Length: 452
Image (cartoon, rainbow, N blue to C red):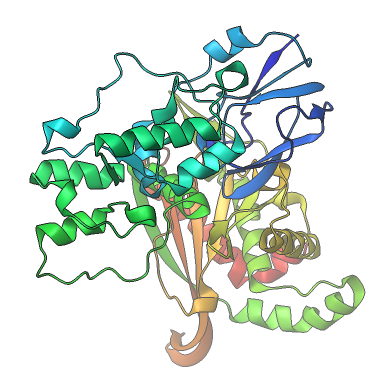
């Protein structure tokens, strides 16, 4: 029996995913549990396994499309069973936000100032267009939006083939329409500009946004330099931090920590532990251990606001931000409170290496209950970290620097470091957050407690 494959929830905070590639083509045989496609979500690329065995009858979600979780992405079945009923239930078009965000895909739009060039709008929402690879390539090269071909397919099962695209392009050319992107057409309509009077600089003479803006203000030189697409990992990071900043009232507390003893202890045990366990203990490892140990005394920071409930997690899973090309990712050290410094060090280095090579699993990036981000390597003395969605606090770690400090009315040179704790004021007030930060400071200033 034919079944619809949906986009599963691959992460704790996942709301949508971007299709990167399909490992199978329509008509291919698929085994249950076999990798079916690759999806980008939660700042990492993940493989989605086939939920069943059968023939991949139809690919609904195409590469580069952003799909909400639980939305249909494909249809599996036998080679000859009907799938029309399942196809009728699939979404018809990408959202307007997706259309605007992907301006460069292009669309054949009528010139807004010339009634003779208008194209009649459909009276109802068109169904999803099924199109052959060659036809899709031709449409893309011609700047033609795929949805404009709805109902024009003459291939098997009304699929749009290459000759249908050529026929539509010929009819559009005869009608005198102008090739333009949706955003360029909107700006031209708002400014009352005739697109026929603009020379397009896009593929095949397509009119782009900048072409219209130059027509509006021809004397003003373009100031735009390099353009970085706001897609993929960069957009996912942006969506996560924006959602957190907008929903959780952030308050940041900063404490100055005397790391002199930690520096001393690390120097004493570094060579021996590296020789015995192959682990080179870092200052981040000490902070993770201290942060996890302090949570046992102040569990409110290890919680999540979910609806009308504040849920305190039973596990202490510390997410550690790792910078990678194009963004950052937060692998999770599970049960950090029960691990030794050596175990934390080995685990963190393993996760960081997998993060940089893009081989982290879903299990390794989900389940975090508290996060740490360290900018000390960049010479940062203070910052306001943003809480990870689904958590209530994050600890920012700054550089260690020698400073003259007054101790018992005497000036001494000490290794000092700032810790910056951002917390969700809906979940806790300043006092419990301050007590937690004070406990972390105490542990780092007396690091022998962390070796027990």
